[in-house]
Image (cartoon, rainbow, N blue to C red; front, side, top):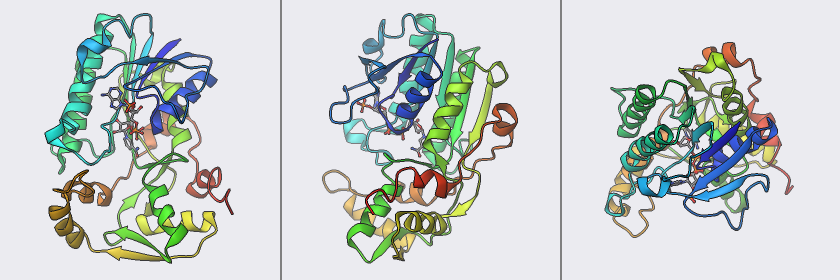
Length: 301
Ligand SMILES: NC(=O)c1ccc[n+]([C@@H]2O[C@H](COP(=O)([O-])OP(=O)(O)OC[C@H]3O[C@@H](n4cnc5c(N)ncnc54)[C@H](OP(=O)(O)O)[C@@H]3O)[C@@H](O)[C@H]2O)c1
């Protein structure tokens, strides 16, 4: 199969690319800039394209049997409306452009990446936009699959690794909120394996799958497991959510928007995937947190 992975240079896109190549597919990555410092798998081709600019997609999907949409707004979850960096523009309108290009260029299968919590009446606008994105995929394609990942971790993630970065030079790890946020963290390789399998699995067609790790943990438990795997002992220092949101009200006006009130909500929202349908359909193993972390943490010990 010829597979185009839009956003294939990102955290999830790279693993999807790796798993699709391992399954014997030809893979083309589409992104705005060719990865330089962190090159792509040499077996993958690369094409420049911007999903927010429909014209830039002209002809790019030609000859492909499947498209995976693994694009994410730069610096997510920090929106910057003045610069046009919004969930609406990248998640919804970017997907609509990709859907139109897939239709025009005769691509068969469309795989979308949504997120746990996507719903028409969800509390946050990024979850409602993911829902709209899902609706657009279902309305426009006959051969589609949507995954709703929980919180994804891996060697290249910028969330859990940020916590652990603090542990290198501080005697504590800062945790926004009370640390009781509930998540079932998903190892990025498991996401890649499932997306690659979905490309050719008839039973996965026209279905939405929540996908997360095998255990539901609190954020404190996740950080403690990660510290243990990395071989460090640190205190967890909680910063009240109200305090961080107040701080964010001020610093969101600084250049680069280091923190926004929405981003505080984003990192403290529950994210538990119900994996029953996924496990029944795919039958693939989901990696426990400590095992996934051990594949890349603690190498510098
Ligand atoms: N990470 C998670 O924990 C998580 C959880 C649930 C759902 N998801 C979903 O999974 C998807 C991928 O997330 P991720 O964490 O892998 O993102 P990521 O690491 O930030 O990667 C984003 C990718 O999109 C590309 N991109 C950005 N803007 C683009 C544009 N306008 N046109 C074409 N390509 C563009 C980037 O390359 P360039 O910048 O070079 O274009 C990069 O390849 C998103 O839909 C996200 O909502 C992620």
